[in-house]
Image 1 (cartoon, rainbow, N blue to C red):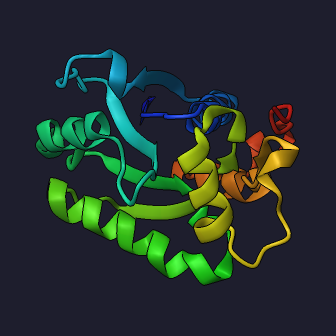
Image 2: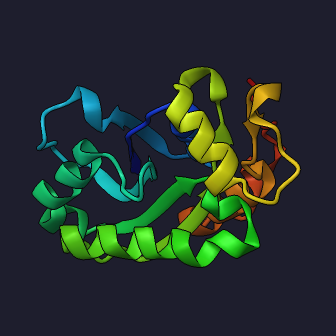
Length: 187
């Protein structure tokens, strides 16, 4: 049985998460096909795929265009398979931001017309070395407002790898064989 893991990434955290999910799927006994929606044509063959994990980050209130285009152009084929959509973002790391993070996911699903079997919000990371002045100021004064997190201290990962493993194992219908995987090294 093959699991398709299709992702888009902006700063690298979502790719790191996708690679981790790839390892979880393989450890659970699945064949895994990992694709980056930025590096492929919009249509892909899903003939041998039984389950699909779709994941992308939220930046400026939206998921990447390539990701949404991939879902929209493959919607009918994707909806014939069991599917999980993971929306990765910093808002998901904080209780006060989860409702807004859910709105971003819901809006993307409305735009694409896709109805997955399951969805989840996954906390992302802060990578200030990738940001210009404007992005750092938005991060500091809007996204992290009132939190004791200083973006000048460098990258900080908020992804809960144990929670992510549980979500993926539940989706795959596995009884926990993959729980022995170690989270990826922090970057």
